[in-house]
Length: 112
Image: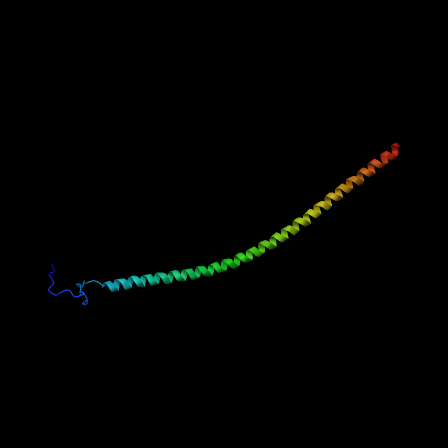
């Protein structure tokens, strides 16, 4: 069965033979330290990204306001150009009517 001469006692810790390398606890502590360092780096990156996102939100808000102002200005310019075009068309039509009246009335008066 067991070649150990001492009887089994569950309350006495088992002394495993020591190896010449670093202990298990030291390895686990090193892994924990590495993990903590990685997590700190990740937290710093997230904080930087949060700052950049805040900057982008501010720039986006400014762009939205600028776009609304541009839209209003473009609408005003379009209306102004439409009225200018309509005035020109009315002037042309009035000029053609006056020209026709000047030509047709004397012809009618002359032949009657």
